[in-house]
Image (cartoon, rainbow, N blue to C red; front, side, top):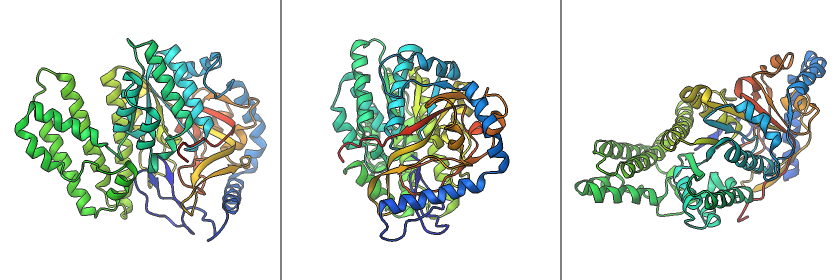
Length: 472
């Protein structure tokens, strides 16, 4: 999860578990949400205007003309109905085994609805069978049990799992998608769609129970040793509380806990699979998830170098989870994450040295395609400087930003293949400009993004509206 936290001056603040340290514009003490938004918009407009050269403005018409020729209109972002307009996107993604579909905010309805619509189309027309979300591995297993076997209540699962940094996924759009996946599987039980979580900040107690149950059944002589290695790790509190408590443990203790999960994983890897290879493989994947969660916390977050290493560790683990799932299930995957996590070039390499999209390209080559998503105006949910979650609204993008030019293309919403667009748009897309990239906290700055280097394909939306968060 891409999480920008607010600070003062050049204030770079501690970032934890997907939190990105950035210099931001802080609202004055006691400022209203409107004042905070206005301050951020003014800063973003100034940044974009300062980045605008006379040549950029003069060339805007020819750039837009080239984009007009390359763009393919989208009928809607809402799922259901005719999807003929998505055939152009099919051609852009080609035979990719994994398609990363981004979002410019973590809580706008239009991004979530678009992913729902695209996934349904890919399932029904292109043979995709897995929806992968930037959510914990164990959360994915619980939702997969529902969509495949009808086990549990999806609304309750989402409420229990999507807490703290993941609360943005507890929305009505994703609940609708999960229910559609279950309905699809009722009709196609022989060829089901699957749900996976690729993230690592949390591993639920049921995963520990599965690993220990497997060991008790197949290698009972190791049970006592495994219990000692997992001591104090199995969650006994809710997801959000567990993450908070883990973060507050002393650094040395977090390191020691990760050392134990690593020894446990190595101990289990040395066992023979026995007759039930599938059960053995599932046990190892779960033990790996436990180890990766502990490993994510085994960094000294007050050390900038270790913080950057923690961010790299997370993105590499997420990519490996996707690749492993793909290899194990043989399914094509639509990966949902923030633009920064599906892309190739980090906007802030000092804090995000290498991101999931780059790792996936390393592993899959042309088998991975990154689709970024931008927007010109609209609303989203995010945490304000006071810690409260609120709805934020932005007006049209400022001159000098990527979105200012993108929104002048003749279509309201459209897709464009960044790899084949003609000049002068090709050169324009290769240059970094201020771009809206909003995480879980707001206000924040606009990073400079070179779209053509960061993504293969771009979807631009004219307007977005804040998602409807459940339980709030």
